[in-house]
Length: 222
Image (cartoon, rainbow, N blue to C red; front, side, top):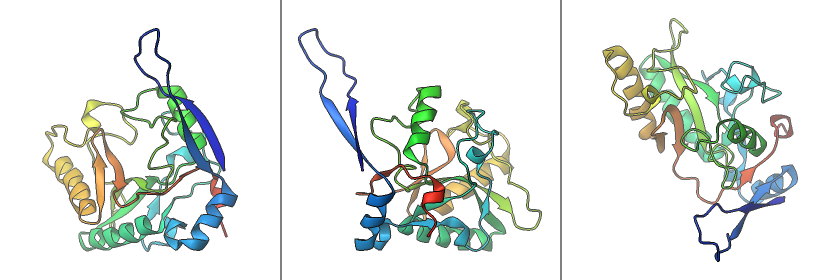
């Protein structure tokens, strides 16, 4: 376990002093101990969900950083998140769609890298707090047609910083709007909430108490 000292950024007078805070980040040892007592804390490999597809952008250079961030193209989430995603997948399959994941659990070190590049917390989490991705409680995803295997048309590409990527941005094309609305509506039925600036980013709401993790994917395989 690492305790990371962080200097809280405040607007203050010359007499005032900024108050330090700390962020506790679990490594592999602390993480494995945590789920021995609480199985819900375990990160589940999302490829175990039938029909799920992966397009892990950060395992390639095809992402906003232009860097290969992950060594492996894997997707993990805490057990309650994986269970809810499985239920959503069943519902999407009834509609002729399947979930395609861009990113899920994200090691804390990746969040630090992203913030060093962007420094805009509308789009990347602050290292001061970590993100729901770091806690295994957020999924970046889209939908594919189960017959054609093609991604459904959405307002923007993944990781777009355009205003058009916002979840409630106006959409002129009715098919695109229907696709985005279907994605949001179905996932909301299973405990997920869309990020207001990213149509692809969904937070699982019942994730209180899960720690920030900094474990590479290869450290998660049993």
